[in-house]
Image (cartoon, rainbow, N blue to C red; front, top):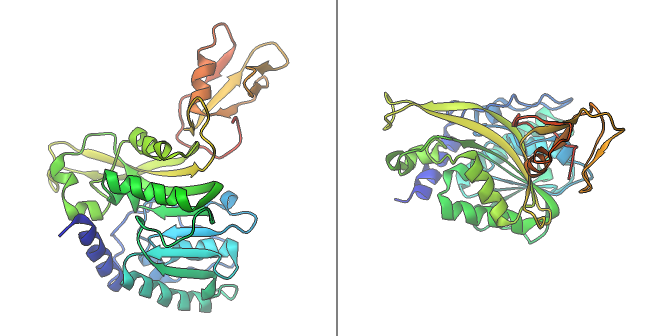
Length: 322
């Protein structure tokens, strides 16, 4: 049995018998006016963060969500879309699609504004998305890509890139780990299916994204997630896993490489009215400017300039350079 078959079986069981502890979501569930999430959806919240960000969901976007779970994030996306087939949900597990449809029936009762036809559910997998090229404004996945091995992950990212419109956004939440995870853990099919042993270091995760062609990457959150300890797992050391929320934008790739925002800020404290690096970045005195890591490095390399560059906060909320 392949690890992908094991994954399907794990989530088939999770669809038929909701498991509250299957994942450990690190982001509080959005509390929005007139949004009432059915209890079963909450029980089936099989993710490690959130992919629903209001600033992504403007001007009636066409939304794709891969790996539907119990439908909670589909319902949240529909809250902003509110149009027939405005949200497409794709899942390879038939039982999960069935459970999701059943949850939508309950959601209609609890939420007068919601209609099930706001969400179009399609059978398919992340490696072969049943979606047209350049047709999606916002694509999302939560704790799914962490399951894939490198070649499958590359293919899944290519598929997301293919279906997104120019400047479209891929919003993701996945576990990451800066320590080396041994082969025994990485090849454990069930642990990989549970998003515990497939974690990449964040730098490698970002490189996978930019290698596909995404010109802008935003690190929106980085939080503690789980530990794999020697008492319960095949490891000689305690492995610390974090969850990361990332937005990759299908912008053209800059000639000098991608813009990756990790929460760095530039502050000019000189005596001039402003500082202009003549590369599109103007710093006003004592006003922090969010900068990508590339720009932060270029500014830090300037000799004799009164500019402070903050460390990465691993939180970026828009604005700033580029």
